[in-house]
Image (cartoon, rainbow, N blue to C red):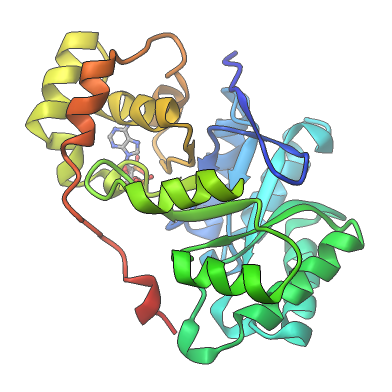
Length: 275
Ligand code: A2P
């Protein structure tokens, strides 16, 4: 069984550096996929109210046989639930769907700057954290400007900022901001959603060189940069392959080669345009 290293979050909580993402996994398939992931050694699961699969994730957690304390569970507040009171209610509803009494990490899914509510939402997060109902709080898709606003108007520094990040969108500047402020960088779509990135000639050449798959090369690049990763797959062989990335290391010049693929290749929306 693979032992995934932990990242120490600024709240003092340890989070596995590699977890299982379930974006785009239908609720009916989530129990099986998460169950498979937990069997092969994943100890962190990343879901969201908006994914519609917290129920399936919860069923997998209930039937996996692992003590609650062994699995790190993340979920996110949906875009229609921003604002203090709605967020408080949304948190309770997520816990209920997950079948949990306490969460490990609660995230704001999108800042939706045009709605001007994320500061109020964050105040609810701070309250939920103070009450001990989640071990850590963080954000997703926040730019440096959104992080500045939280810093100026609220008390708790987010433990995590989960952003689109892969070799075609390396987020170098944002990662530097995170490092300076003690915010862990978490990558969503770490494999570029399984698209062109996996077929990139450099990635293919490195896969050949190391005798690993393209996905494993990309995941190593993330891990060696200190990113938290949550690759998604519903394919058992890939679920296994994606956690089997701790027995080799990319050389410095190969890391630099992958760094050179950065091309502002965003796949998802620009965070300022959502909501
Ligand atoms: P599938 O779920 O059908 O196995 P990301 O995590 O970057 O969003 O990427 C998820 C996509 O990449 C999914 O389409 C998934 O397909 C695919 N994928 C996940 N792991 C691998 C892998 N090891 N090799 C090839 N494709 C993968």
